[in-house]
Image 1: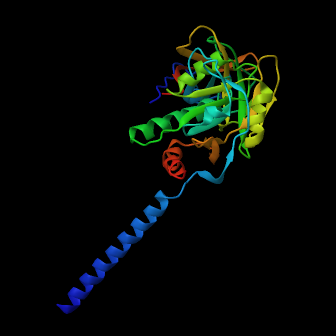
Image 2: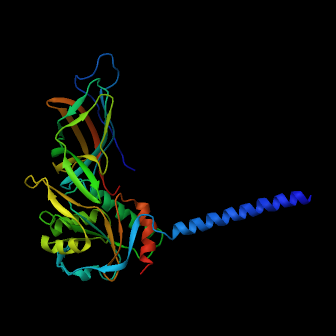
Image 3: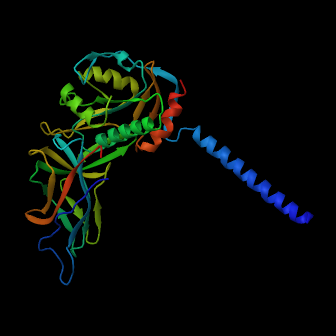
Length: 140
Length: 204
């Protein structure tokens, strides 16, 4: 049983007027890999855009990793191909799903041994969303 | 009274027929692989020289003497590879819990020997359970194996040391005589391996 803890979900000033609740919301957040100290881990979550306008995620960072990239695995004819997505657009009212074998965050080179992990999603310099989770070993 | 007996007999007969039909259908399901393709010809593996995760030089005989579930991936793969290795490890544990024998070994053949040293393979294999095998080595030697088995891999998105490798997602089943016996296509699910592997290993 994976333990997922959303530590914080908040958004920058992109919310639409009169709207209640955060304009960009995360759910089902998990960071997994063979082990916390492995050079690569993967992040999965759902990001719902309720901001009233389209958003564009151009950068993801984590204090626990050297770098974080958005990638997508596509399996066709039994061949897996993984490609980097430089920027991810999420239309207003839609949800981007990061899942195994599909879009995922690639967390590269842990700084120390991550336990709690924070993921920050930006549109240029604007922080859209910050979420926290615990590292989950792939065996769990 | 006679009519009541007739109705009762009809109901009983229908129930027996339905039960028999269900039993026959279940028996058919049990005997047929649900997610794998059996390869009755049992293609033999080619000659190759690789290094296992303990640093020992091995050849094709490393596949002799036990059933193997073989996946081709790399330790820097964050998505498909750990997911597949987790499925294989879990399937093996579930088969063990059911008391099934033989228990196929989980084998990872690296398609990224540049970064996958025997030490890296040892760490990685260990994450997914006991008794696994990691193979790495010279890329031309790996290609001897992948080429004969129809496994594709190609370096992609080169960016210094941060690159990916496109690769086949199939899991191959090798018999104790070192012959290719079956393959599973993605998406891989634990229940499919638990269902099909006893059928495959019973087919020798």
